[in-house]
Length: 178
Image 1 (cartoon, one colour):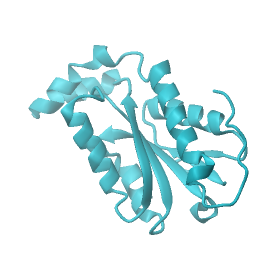
Image 2: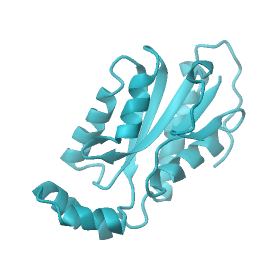
Image 3: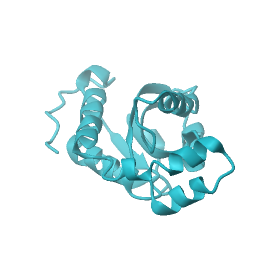
Image 4: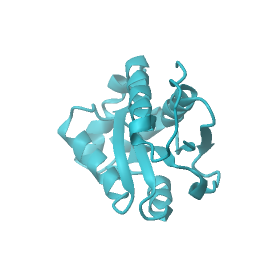
């Protein structure tokens, strides 16, 4: 199976997750930043990573997802400042999936990402009460994504790249270790 792992990362959080997925899947899996144009037709599965931006996908990610051919097999992985068990987090992740409405969306993995000082300052100065609250949570995001979140992303990718999800008649080898 031909797999592309592509990502948009502003502060390095999403890139860290993308690199772990790429290493874990091994083989001929390709890793590219989202702004590096790829021939998406040649890939059987595309993992797309990006940060939550204003309660949904980053504009760069949304544009990329919507540009993919109808029915393209994709999986999303997102980083966000909010705790993944917070009600707002699930709504944000759902909004990300809406960008893939006409794609074959196999799944979405979400984990926390460290909120940069600059972003936290901008949020704290916002007139939006919710953004101010998120800006004040920066200390709680330090160190994310952590090893457990990275391992969760790898398990997510392995499950979706397994032969049961593959349309090709192939004998996939065991994924490489992280």
